[in-house]
Image 1: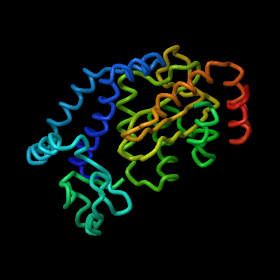
Image 2: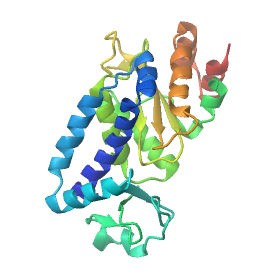
Image 3: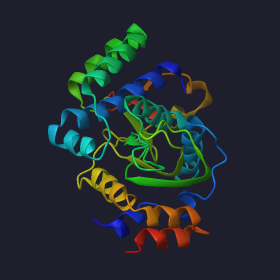
Image 4: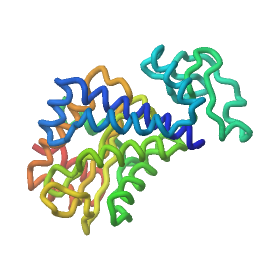
Length: 113
Length: 153
Protein backbone atom coordinates (compact mmCIF):
# COMPACT_ATOMS: atom_id res chain seq x y z
CA UNK A 1 0.00 0.00 0.00
CA UNK A 2 1.10 3.56 -0.65
CA UNK A 3 3.03 4.85 2.36
CA UNK A 4 0.94 7.99 2.63
CA UNK A 5 -2.22 5.93 2.60
CA UNK A 6 -0.74 3.58 5.17
CA UNK A 7 -0.17 6.50 7.52
CA UNK A 8 -3.70 7.79 7.01
CA UNK A 9 -5.17 4.34 7.75
CA UNK A 10 -2.98 4.14 10.82
CA UNK A 11 -4.23 7.55 11.96
CA UNK A 12 -7.82 6.44 11.50
CA UNK A 13 -7.24 3.24 13.49
CA UNK A 14 -5.70 5.31 16.28
CA UNK A 15 -8.71 7.62 16.24
CA UNK A 16 -10.83 4.53 16.97
CA UNK A 17 -8.63 3.65 19.97
CA UNK A 18 -8.73 7.28 21.09
CA UNK A 19 -12.53 7.21 21.02
CA UNK A 20 -12.47 4.32 23.52
CA UNK A 21 -9.78 5.97 25.63
CA UNK A 22 -11.72 9.26 25.80
CA UNK A 23 -14.93 7.50 26.78
CA UNK A 24 -14.50 7.58 30.56
CA UNK A 25 -16.78 4.62 31.26
CA UNK A 26 -15.24 2.46 28.57
CA UNK A 27 -11.69 3.42 29.52
CA UNK A 28 -12.44 2.44 33.12
CA UNK A 29 -13.64 -0.98 31.97
CA UNK A 30 -10.43 -1.55 29.99
CA UNK A 31 -8.30 -0.43 32.91
CA UNK A 32 -10.22 -2.70 35.28
CA UNK A 33 -9.31 -5.64 33.05
CA UNK A 34 -5.65 -4.64 33.22
CA UNK A 35 -5.35 -2.90 29.84
CA UNK A 36 -3.77 0.54 29.95
CA UNK A 37 -5.51 3.41 28.18
CA UNK A 38 -3.54 6.58 27.61
CA UNK A 39 -5.49 9.15 25.57
CA UNK A 40 -2.72 11.73 25.88
CA UNK A 41 -0.20 9.34 24.35
CA UNK A 42 -2.59 8.38 21.53
CA UNK A 43 -3.29 12.06 20.74
CA UNK A 44 0.45 12.68 20.59
CA UNK A 45 1.00 9.74 18.26
CA UNK A 46 -1.83 10.89 15.97
CA UNK A 47 -0.38 14.42 15.81
CA UNK A 48 3.06 13.00 15.01
CA UNK A 49 1.69 10.75 12.28
CA UNK A 50 -0.29 13.58 10.69
CA UNK A 51 2.94 15.57 10.44
CA UNK A 52 4.36 12.73 8.35
CA UNK A 53 1.59 13.04 5.77
CA UNK A 54 2.42 14.93 2.59
CA UNK A 55 0.98 18.48 2.95
CA UNK A 56 -1.39 18.07 -0.01
CA UNK A 57 -2.95 14.92 1.50
CA UNK A 58 -2.75 16.29 5.03
CA UNK A 59 -4.83 19.37 4.17
CA UNK A 60 -7.41 17.25 2.43
CA UNK A 61 -7.54 14.77 5.32
CA UNK A 62 -8.01 17.54 7.89
CA UNK A 63 -10.84 19.06 5.85
CA UNK A 64 -12.49 15.64 5.57
CA UNK A 65 -12.10 15.12 9.30
CA UNK A 66 -14.20 18.21 9.98
CA UNK A 67 -16.95 16.73 7.85
CA UNK A 68 -16.82 13.03 8.77
CA UNK A 69 -15.93 11.04 11.87
CA UNK A 70 -14.57 8.40 9.47
CA UNK A 71 -12.58 10.26 6.80
CA UNK A 72 -10.64 7.11 5.82
CA UNK A 73 -12.67 4.00 5.01
CA UNK A 74 -12.14 0.61 3.37
CA UNK A 75 -13.76 -0.52 0.14
CA UNK A 76 -15.86 -3.66 0.54
CA UNK A 77 -17.54 -5.55 -2.29
CA UNK A 78 -16.84 -2.65 -4.62
CA UNK A 79 -18.50 -0.08 -2.34
CA UNK A 80 -17.16 2.81 -0.29
CA UNK A 81 -18.06 1.85 3.30
CA UNK A 82 -18.55 5.52 4.17
CA UNK A 83 -21.39 6.30 1.76
CA UNK A 84 -21.98 2.89 0.09
CA UNK A 85 -21.53 4.34 -3.42
CA UNK A 86 -20.00 2.08 -6.05
CA UNK A 87 -16.28 2.44 -6.48
CA UNK A 88 -15.07 2.18 -10.09
CA UNK A 89 -13.10 -0.95 -10.94
CA UNK A 90 -10.12 1.28 -11.80
CA UNK A 91 -9.68 1.67 -8.02
CA UNK A 92 -7.99 -1.72 -7.82
CA UNK A 93 -5.97 -1.41 -11.02
CA UNK A 94 -2.20 -1.72 -10.79
CA UNK A 95 -1.91 1.80 -12.21
CA UNK A 96 -3.65 3.17 -9.12
CA UNK A 97 -2.28 0.93 -6.41
CA UNK A 98 0.26 3.52 -5.34
CA UNK A 99 -2.12 6.46 -5.21
CA UNK A 100 -4.14 7.98 -2.42
CA UNK A 101 -7.66 7.65 -3.84
CA UNK A 102 -10.97 9.19 -2.90
CA UNK A 103 -14.55 8.07 -3.18
CA UNK A 104 -16.03 9.94 -6.15
CA UNK A 105 -19.31 10.28 -4.30
CA UNK A 106 -18.45 11.40 -0.73
CA UNK A 107 -14.77 12.29 -1.12
CA UNK A 108 -13.58 10.05 1.72
CA UNK A 109 -10.11 8.54 1.36
CA UNK A 110 -10.60 4.90 0.41
CA UNK A 111 -8.35 1.88 0.61
CA UNK A 112 -8.35 -1.83 -0.20
CA UNK A 113 -8.33 -4.17 2.78
CA UNK B 1 -22.65 -12.65 27.26
CA UNK B 2 -20.94 -15.87 28.35
CA UNK B 3 -18.05 -17.99 27.16
CA UNK B 4 -20.25 -19.79 24.60
CA UNK B 5 -21.10 -16.44 22.99
CA UNK B 6 -17.40 -15.59 22.92
CA UNK B 7 -16.59 -18.90 21.23
CA UNK B 8 -19.01 -18.03 18.42
CA UNK B 9 -16.60 -15.24 17.49
CA UNK B 10 -13.85 -17.69 16.61
CA UNK B 11 -13.62 -20.97 14.69
CA UNK B 12 -11.26 -23.89 14.03
CA UNK B 13 -9.84 -21.90 11.09
CA UNK B 14 -8.90 -19.12 13.52
CA UNK B 15 -7.09 -21.48 15.88
CA UNK B 16 -3.31 -21.97 15.78
CA UNK B 17 -2.56 -25.08 17.89
CA UNK B 18 1.18 -24.42 17.95
CA UNK B 19 2.77 -21.14 16.97
CA UNK B 20 5.98 -21.15 14.96
CA UNK B 21 6.84 -17.65 16.17
CA UNK B 22 9.25 -17.23 19.05
CA UNK B 23 8.94 -13.48 19.66
CA UNK B 24 6.19 -10.93 20.21
CA UNK B 25 6.12 -9.45 16.70
CA UNK B 26 6.25 -12.90 15.17
CA UNK B 27 3.23 -14.01 17.22
CA UNK B 28 1.21 -10.99 16.12
CA UNK B 29 2.22 -11.53 12.48
CA UNK B 30 1.29 -15.22 12.55
CA UNK B 31 -2.06 -14.56 14.15
CA UNK B 32 -2.89 -11.71 11.77
CA UNK B 33 -1.95 -13.94 8.81
CA UNK B 34 -4.56 -16.47 9.94
CA UNK B 35 -7.16 -13.72 10.26
CA UNK B 36 -6.37 -12.39 6.79
CA UNK B 37 -6.56 -15.84 5.21
CA UNK B 38 -9.90 -16.56 6.88
CA UNK B 39 -11.45 -13.21 5.95
CA UNK B 40 -9.78 -13.03 2.53
CA UNK B 41 -8.12 -9.72 3.34
CA UNK B 42 -4.85 -8.62 1.80
CA UNK B 43 -3.68 -5.65 3.82
CA UNK B 44 -1.93 -7.02 6.88
CA UNK B 45 -0.51 -3.63 7.91
CA UNK B 46 -3.99 -2.31 8.72
CA UNK B 47 -4.29 -4.76 11.59
CA UNK B 48 -0.67 -5.38 12.48
CA UNK B 49 0.31 -1.74 12.99
CA UNK B 50 -2.73 -1.19 15.19
CA UNK B 51 -1.85 -4.19 17.38
CA UNK B 52 1.81 -3.20 17.65
CA UNK B 53 0.83 0.30 18.78
CA UNK B 54 -1.63 -1.12 21.27
CA UNK B 55 1.18 -3.21 22.76
CA UNK B 56 3.36 -0.09 23.05
CA UNK B 57 0.67 1.51 25.22
CA UNK B 58 1.02 -1.42 27.63
CA UNK B 59 1.49 -5.15 27.17
CA UNK B 60 -1.71 -7.13 26.77
CA UNK B 61 -0.11 -10.14 28.50
CA UNK B 62 -2.08 -9.44 31.65
CA UNK B 63 -2.99 -12.96 32.71
CA UNK B 64 -0.65 -15.64 34.02
CA UNK B 65 0.75 -17.07 30.80
CA UNK B 66 -2.05 -15.46 28.77
CA UNK B 67 -2.12 -12.47 26.42
CA UNK B 68 -5.05 -10.67 24.81
CA UNK B 69 -3.72 -8.58 21.92
CA UNK B 70 -6.69 -6.46 20.91
CA UNK B 71 -7.95 -3.29 19.32
CA UNK B 72 -10.33 -1.71 16.87
CA UNK B 73 -9.56 -1.80 13.18
CA UNK B 74 -11.12 -0.57 9.96
CA UNK B 75 -10.33 -4.03 8.58
CA UNK B 76 -13.30 -5.75 10.16
CA UNK B 77 -17.06 -5.30 10.31
CA UNK B 78 -17.56 -7.65 13.22
CA UNK B 79 -15.65 -8.80 16.28
CA UNK B 80 -13.25 -11.64 15.46
CA UNK B 81 -11.13 -13.71 17.81
CA UNK B 82 -7.98 -15.57 16.77
CA UNK B 83 -6.64 -18.10 19.29
CA UNK B 84 -3.08 -19.44 19.45
CA UNK B 85 -0.81 -21.47 21.69
CA UNK B 86 2.90 -21.81 22.25
CA UNK B 87 4.11 -24.80 24.27
CA UNK B 88 7.53 -23.26 24.85
CA UNK B 89 6.10 -19.84 25.62
CA UNK B 90 6.97 -16.45 24.20
CA UNK B 91 8.34 -13.32 25.85
CA UNK B 92 5.32 -11.02 25.47
CA UNK B 93 6.45 -8.40 28.02
CA UNK B 94 4.05 -9.90 30.51
CA UNK B 95 3.34 -8.14 33.78
CA UNK B 96 4.77 -11.04 35.81
CA UNK B 97 7.77 -11.46 33.48
CA UNK B 98 6.83 -15.07 32.73
CA UNK B 99 6.52 -16.53 29.20
CA UNK B 100 3.11 -16.40 27.52
CA UNK B 101 1.56 -19.65 26.26
CA UNK B 102 -2.03 -18.75 25.35
CA UNK B 103 -3.06 -15.91 23.03
CA UNK B 104 -6.52 -14.55 22.37
CA UNK B 105 -6.44 -11.84 19.72
CA UNK B 106 -9.59 -9.72 19.52
CA UNK B 107 -10.07 -7.48 16.50
CA UNK B 108 -13.06 -5.21 16.94
CA UNK B 109 -14.87 -3.15 14.31
CA UNK B 110 -14.99 0.67 14.44
CA UNK B 111 -18.50 0.60 15.90
CA UNK B 112 -19.57 -1.95 18.44
CA UNK B 113 -23.16 -1.31 19.47
CA UNK B 114 -23.58 -4.30 21.79
CA UNK B 115 -20.28 -3.54 23.55
CA UNK B 116 -19.26 -7.07 22.60
CA UNK B 117 -15.60 -6.12 22.47
CA UNK B 118 -15.08 -5.25 26.14
CA UNK B 119 -17.57 -7.86 27.30
CA UNK B 120 -15.71 -10.59 25.44
CA UNK B 121 -12.42 -9.42 26.94
CA UNK B 122 -14.02 -9.48 30.38
CA UNK B 123 -15.40 -13.00 29.93
CA UNK B 124 -12.05 -14.31 28.67
CA UNK B 125 -9.89 -12.64 31.32
CA UNK B 126 -12.16 -13.99 34.05
CA UNK B 127 -12.21 -17.50 32.59
CA UNK B 128 -8.44 -17.56 32.19
CA UNK B 129 -7.90 -16.70 35.86
CA UNK B 130 -8.48 -20.36 36.60
CA UNK B 131 -5.25 -22.35 36.59
CA UNK B 132 -7.06 -25.62 35.79
CA UNK B 133 -8.64 -24.04 32.72
CA UNK B 134 -5.29 -22.71 31.53
CA UNK B 135 -3.67 -26.12 31.92
CA UNK B 136 -6.54 -27.83 30.10
CA UNK B 137 -6.31 -25.31 27.26
CA UNK B 138 -2.58 -25.86 26.91
CA UNK B 139 -3.02 -29.61 26.84
CA UNK B 140 -6.09 -29.81 24.58
CA UNK B 141 -5.39 -32.05 21.59
CA UNK B 142 -7.44 -30.06 19.09
CA UNK B 143 -9.89 -27.19 18.70
CA UNK B 144 -12.81 -29.28 19.88
CA UNK B 145 -11.02 -30.19 23.11
CA UNK B 146 -9.84 -26.60 23.47
CA UNK B 147 -13.33 -25.12 23.18
CA UNK B 148 -14.62 -27.90 25.47
CA UNK B 149 -12.08 -26.93 28.14
CA UNK B 150 -13.07 -23.31 27.80
CA UNK B 151 -16.78 -23.98 28.29
CA UNK B 152 -16.30 -26.41 31.17
CA UNK B 153 -17.69 -25.10 34.46
